[in-house]
Image (cartoon, rainbow, N blue to C red; front, top):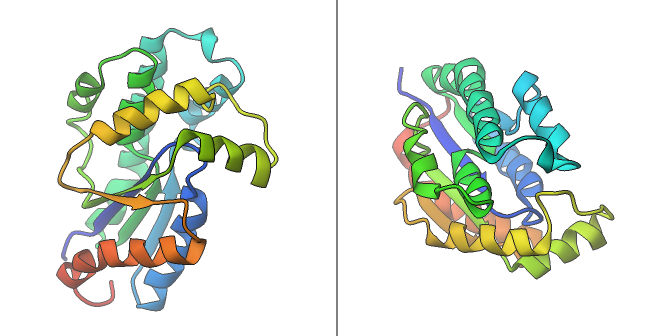
Length: 204
């Protein structure tokens, strides 16, 4: 059986990842593909501990925070991502290790060292990096979503994160402007993955 396809949605908070991923999943299913939708942090033990940091990030050290993300990702790969890939399915994940490199890198850790610590993780076939200014993201979070900014979403933090995302140069990354309409962004996403679908063949 041909190995599946791993597509990661990345970008700073408020770029529309959680909106665009289900739209792509529905499109792929309409073409006959079997699709797994997933996200990080997960709902597992480590993911729950990570979400507890949203309102009090200072309760752990940066190294401890990084270790939580790594352990959560190892479980995610073992329990969800790798089995789906082995079954020839298309996996769409809302965040992957690029987010860890960007967010924990912005907090003071070495982003390239974080990448090196993810040698265990399957490299995504495509990273859809949704881009917009941090100010636009904050406006979306507070305006459209009506939410308060958590500890990972402060403007000065997002600016550092955005700069790190902009510095990443892996071949799998496709940058997609996120400030356009939902429909326009979705069309660009479909264009970005169309070569993968051609390589992957017909329905899974």
